[in-house]
Amino acid sequence: GRIEICGVSCFVLSREPFPALASALRRFHRQQEREDARLGTIHEKLSSNPSSANVRGFQSRNVIFHLTGGGFFAHTIAGEISFLLDWSAATNAVVIIPEYALLPHHKFPDAIQEVERIYRSLRFGHAVSLLGFRPDKIIVTGESVGGNLASALCVSLIMSYEKNDHCEELSHLASMELVSDRDDETDEEGESRALLAGGSAPDCRHVGIGLPDALMLCCPALNLSSDMTQSRVDGAHDPVLPSGLLAVISSSYVQNDCDSKNPLASPYFATDVTLRQFPSTLIFTGSEDPLLDDSVTFNARLRGLGVKSYLRAVHDMPHAFWALSTAGIGLEVQRECQEWLQKAFCIR
Image (cartoon, rainbow, N blue to C red):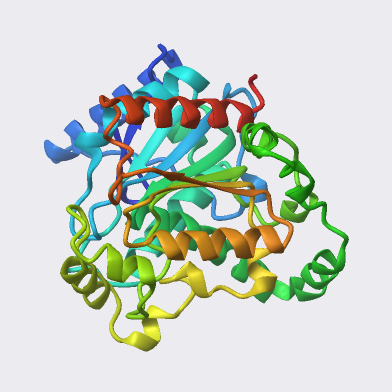
């Protein structure tokens, strides 16, 4: 079904029957019908103070907050519903997909601002009465520019926390001895075990920031600058993201090359202080993806800063391949996505 959160239309999916959510969706649509009929409607007021949100009496449910690709020009929901429903079935989570602001009428930072408002509403309980349930753990997923927004969301949450007189606390956290996952890299089998365990343990660095419990990205557009890398040269003729299209997306979304290096537009350029606070992260990329090098560098930075971050490069795959779940390699990737989500939600 569809519902509005913070004024933004969102698709809400659940493979398993969930009466509380179904009732909330019916209530929302009845309200919309009354508005269409120009009858008076009493709107629920959502508190702007997270601590005052009343969540008592509401059933809790894990949430997958999914951000679609589409180059900031379109949403790719239709092609993604199949695997999103599979994720919902594997985790018993509700999938929420915002239709964030698009080009050409909305440029940076409109989309990330909308995404952050919706996420905060979910994380801090503002949307409880609207949805009919209380979000428990929230994992943010995103493909291509959706991966950009998912990463930028974390950057924005951390930077906002830094600005609110918490710099000393973050400095203390940054100086803590963080457990590296490099001990798990003794062999390929050990790396696989570490990957599937990612995100299962709470991280003291995230207390108070309100970060997602984990991130799962596919071919994220982390760097919207015009900087050239070897993978961008080699993947100039990618069937999904050729170099000309990448340039159009970047120049349309950000106003100039200076803005393209703003960490909220290009999380690739976030500082170490910010990145070391990131939640457990899994990045899928294709060996032929023009953005491969950006993902490799970003993952290496996260790992070097003590973040549980893992990279999976799938052989002979172009940019943004999550929806290719009908092919053999696509099924294998989707199985790995489902297993990682289950571990991150601590349900296996």
